[in-house]
Image (cartoon, rainbow, N blue to C red; front, side, top):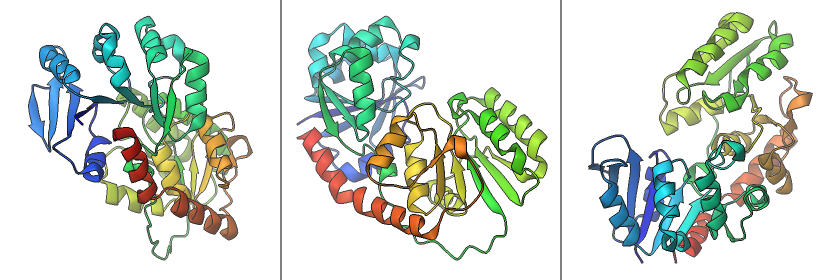
Length: 325
């Protein structure tokens, strides 16, 4: 079975490669502006220059794993070669299908043709079926190792502040300004506000930093440098409360890790992520009722137990096996 993975960035691909651990049957291509090169068994294709190589790869495989639909060039190729669509399995990331009015006509038509959908959030699949008129099969899968239990042991926390995380990236969909307005009434409390801004829109990040500093002064700490996984996990371990004001499913890797670590997580109730987390009996909190009280110990322990038993590596490997085989 020759399986081709195509993505537009590698942050999810390398951890997945380590889980699959099969370089004979799996090939990985990242579509980028870089010249053609290879790194860690990943090929980087300039989608304009290496169009023939991409066409060859697409037509000489048994399955195509689409890690998000963010490349117009790839979507156009697949749309105008409809025999390829039946081989496609779409790992649904969220930003690639919400806001359908912003999607091209070709992309909307291509999504309607897809028959194999991969996500663990059924609400996202139901949304796509309703909005795009799809009728394919759902392959329930945790998608990436970042969503799995970390089995992380916390050190004794001796800090005397309430540490609050706001959002997970410099994407305007995080609605940082709205969160800051909610938190303004707590600015004189013993808090620190951490805002991850290492990837996303740099100009928007500057606006977030400006407003955060203006409202909270030295209590606001923008995080503009990229952190490796272990370093970022240590950061999450120091958080008490995390606030995500997305209007759609987003940042689930962050959210699941924070819940497992016993943190209090706020979400908007109209999201598919809220619905999913409630369905598996996790205790999460509604954004409109925001306060800075820490989560109760009984809820903390129960949340951690659920994550550890639900998002396991064994279950994940079986899910991947069903897709690949």
